[in-house]
Length: 199
Image (cartoon, rainbow, N blue to C red; front, side, top):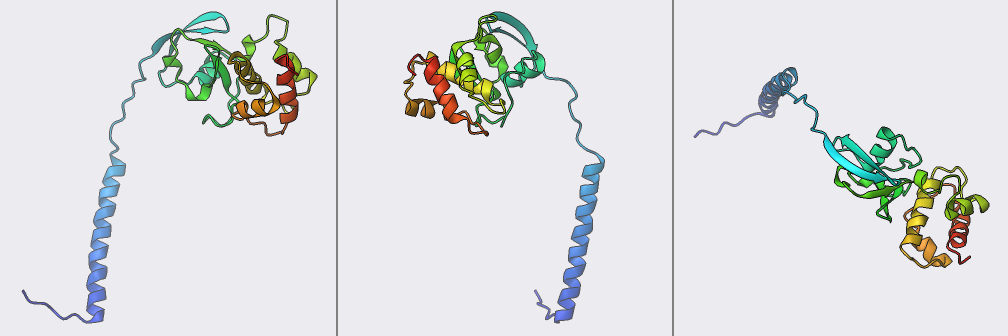
């Protein structure tokens, strides 16, 4: 094998020629790929049959298995009291009760909740009679803009259902998953303490 001694000018010329050929070949391959995209399946996912007991009433539904509980409530059943905040389970705006316990509706697939019981803010009052938490939030102005309020109230309802301690420090700890951008936390704590009967 003979090794050729190249001048700097020859080396740069040969390198540029090789690089240009590779770039042209790469563009041709990319162009072919863009011109003929792979076929995309146009069929919709098979709908899933689910029965959810929602605010005391059985709802028989056929849903896309990818539908979250939050989207089911808001987009399909038009129960817009449950709010969409971060959509990642971090803010608590979508808190509802599942079998009496607090959950973030944005993190749950509705198709997995067959024969489970879901309670939303719309189902908390007893007819025209407000739940004690709702009344306490109004009395103590436990909201400002009000966007987080349904999630705060449902989380507080879960806290009381779970038998958590209701001193101020414990309430702050157990409600820490619910964020209020307006900073109404002191009034929220007072409202929860009153509703718990220990204020």
